Length: 553
Image (cartoon, rainbow, N blue to C red; front, top):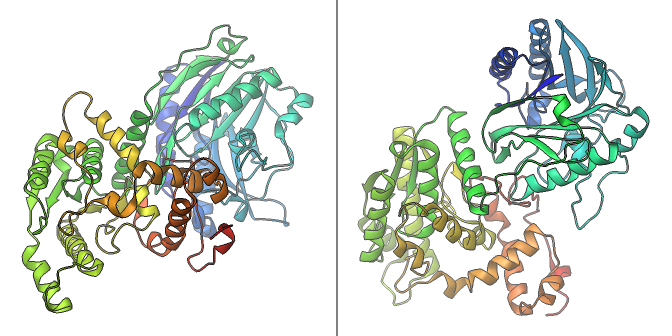
C-alpha cells in the first residue's frame, strides 16, 4: 500500500478554498500512484474554528463540502478531518471527526475521544467525545484512525500530571491494528516536535504497529502549526519526515514501515533558527490570509524593533516593509545612525518623521512649566505620539502595523498603552529579551543585517536623558529566569527562590507580572512560540488578589 502524508496549510472558515487545496494534493498523489492520502485534523474547516462552530451555516458548509469531496474521491482513498454532527441527542452537538473517503463515498467516520481543554484549547466546549474507536479495513489492513490528542494526550503537562483517565492506546491491544494513523492540528512551541516524536515512537513500539502522524502547517491568528509530520516503524523508529513550517507531500510504501533497523537522521537546527522560521510563517500567514501585503514598523534604533523588522522583511519581502524613524530630542546620534543603517541593511523602505515639535505641543499643553525630572506620564507621551504616527500611516496606506514589544517587557508592563503597544500584530511578544539577542546573532550569521552596535549597546527607551532599561527592570538574565519559571513552567514563588534568586526580586517581579494584566488584555495579538504564552493560553483575571503567593513579606 502506497501512502502519502499531505501536510497542508488551511485557513479557518475558507471551506471551499481548503477543499480545493485537498483536491490539488489528491491529484499530485494520484500521479505518484498513491493508494491512500492522509490530511490533518479539521482540514476542511481550518483549525481552530472557535465560536464559528456556533454558526450553523459554517457547520453545514463543511458537511456539504465533505459530500462533494467524497463523490470526487475514487482513487486514491483519502482520510480528512472535518466537523461532524453528533447523532446522539445527549451531550454536545458536534464531533471532531475524520472521514475515510473512497470510491465516491464516505466509507467510514471516526471521532476524537480525548478533547483538550488546556492552554489554547477549549474543545469540550463544542465537541462530544467519542466512546469507541474500531479500526477501518482497507486493502486487507486494519487501520486505527485517531485524532491528535487521542495519542498526544500521553504528553505529560502541568507538572507531570496526566490529563485523561481514558487511554485509547490500551484498546489497541484488543483490536490489534496493522497501522495507526493520527491526524493532528498540534500547535507549535519550541521543542514540541521532539516531544511528539518521543510519545508516538513509544506508542508504535508498544502496540507493535507502524504509525503515521500528519500535522497541520501554517498559522491562524496567534497559533502556529509547524508541520513536522512523520512515519514511525513498528519498533518505534522514525522512517519518514515532512518538512518544518512548509507544505509538503511525502509518499512511501507501507512495507517500508516494517521493523526498520535504522532511524532517519533529523536535520537538527539551532533553537533560534526554529523560532525565526515559526515567526516568519506566523507573520506571513497573518498578512496573506487577511489580504494584506505591507507592514509598517517603528524603527527605534533598538534591538527589538530591529529583530521585528528583520523577520517581517523575511516573511513579506523587504519591499513590503516600511520602517519609520521617529527621533525625539532624547534620541542620540548613534541611535539615529543605527536605525538608518538597519533599514539600509534590510533593504526596507525608510521614512523619517521627527516628533520633537509634536511632543513639545503635548508637553506644554498637559504639563505646563518644565521640571528637572521628566515624569513617567511625560515619557509616555512620546511613545503615544509615535503610536499615533504609525497608526495614521497604516490607515492612510492600507498597511498593517507591527508592535515590537518582547515578552520580558510585556510581562512586567514595561510598555506604553496606545504607544509602543499600538499595532495589529506583536510578532515577538512571546520572545524573551535574552532570546532576542540570540535571534539577532542568528540573523547576522551570513551577513550583518542588524548593526552590531544595536546588539552591543545597553537597551534604552530613550524617553529621558541617560535612560537604561536595566536601571528600571534589573538584569534581563534574572528577569527572564523568573518569567520562564513563573509563567511558562508554572512554578511558585518559593520554587523560584529555592533556585537562588533573592526573595525580594522574585516577589517584585511577580507583583509586576500580575499587576500588568490590564495592559496585556489591550495589546495586539502575539505569535505563540513558547509552551505558555500570554493571550489565549493564559486566561488570568485582571481584578484579583495574589497575597496567597507571598509566604513572607
